[in-house]
Image 1 (cartoon, rainbow, N blue to C red):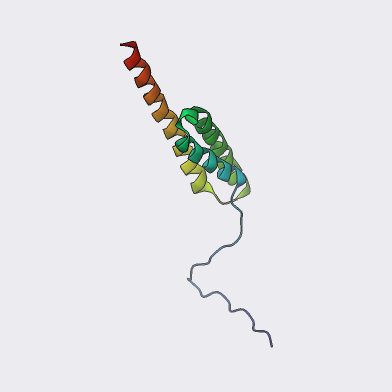
Image 2 (image 1 turned 90 degrees about the vertical axis):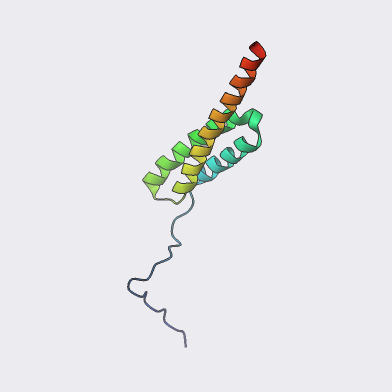
Length: 98
């Protein structure tokens, strides 16, 4: 005899298994992580992270996929690595000039 599933308790949190993590958000997170690890390539990898994170956020809004936080973190990390490496390279160039 098979048991019938219990109806959800009113007011109880419901765990959703629907939706998938947006592939662009995952790609942006990978680019952002690589931009932190490989600082000489931070401009290229950071730019890739920023561009794919922006695309992911647009797709997430349109499709309802999960991954908004992942895309936001990748966006912030991509910009941060671009800025940090720019400041480091500018400091090195200025110190070499004087």
